[in-house]
Image (cartoon, rainbow, N blue to C red; front, top):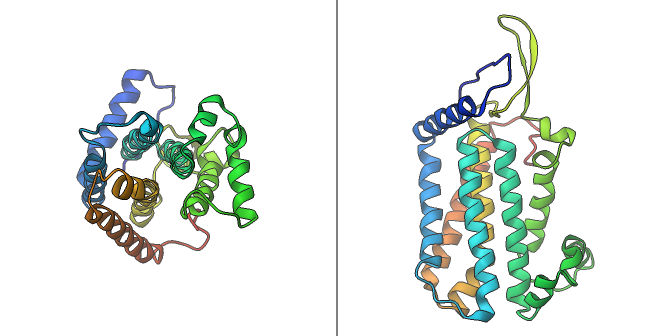
Length: 254
């Protein structure tokens, strides 16, 4: 993606026009990633289209819909070169998946969710204690998603120093200056692809949290849908492993 140095604050028209420019560049350059994006969208569509939902299941489908919104928003942020915002959005989707996992596991707990009562009054601590004490979890993917949630927070939330990892750049020509960037860019092509794969694999795991509920309990999709989801996850993992070989040691994702 192309960097543009502005020496005065841009207005909203300029900002949005640059966003659209970066989005078009992403469409042209990220053809492989767009195939994965389309595949994930198709899996969401199969699970969510034309659904009739029972009242007792409504909260679960609300969480599923919430994760799909953030799938779209985080991808749009990534393609517009708002890297931190993309992962902040994915972090919110993880929240939705973890809550969904708890409600699927204990359907009666949705009442506590609406009232912000235990365990939802401090849900992160509750899950952390379950993991640390090796107790039964709402879903096997809870530890992995909980860990991602913490990792994403180090550079995609608030104004912590880590959030400036991709926002500060040193420009040497025509004169040396330090810039704070409204658009964030990967250092190289391998890192750019890693960011996309990490984001998409997060949403594969998020969708997998709901997969048994959708396939076994709701019979909204056939078992083949779940197999396809797992196959996509494995394909992303293989590509991710290969690309990491081109990255320097200590890359944030590790």
